[in-house]
Amino acid sequence: FRRVLFRSLPGLDPDKVYEVSPLDVSLDLIKQDITNGQSPLGWWNPEGVKMTGRALETYGIRPPSLHPAQAVLFKVVEI
Image (cartoon, rainbow, N blue to C red; front, side):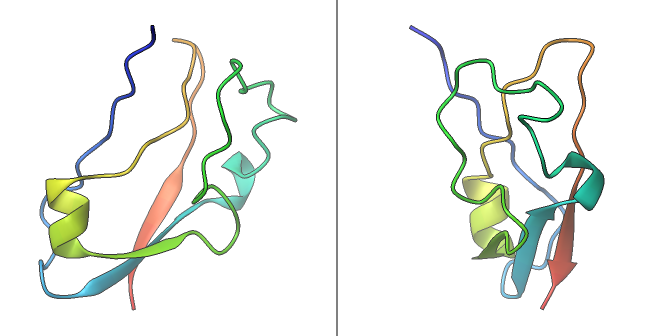
């Protein structure tokens, strides 16, 4: 059993809507060999996902599973 961790994004305006998406350099997880057998993340695509600041702070988003030496970048933009 593997525990799924969601990351909260505090400090956003709770009533505004934000688009969360991976930066281009981090978009292709397979090319970077960051699959780890995990199921695909629905929001990890060029369009990302749109959520309120409240939802991002309360529930967060599920980042990709990474090995200790790996990193990915994503952006949060108010829309």
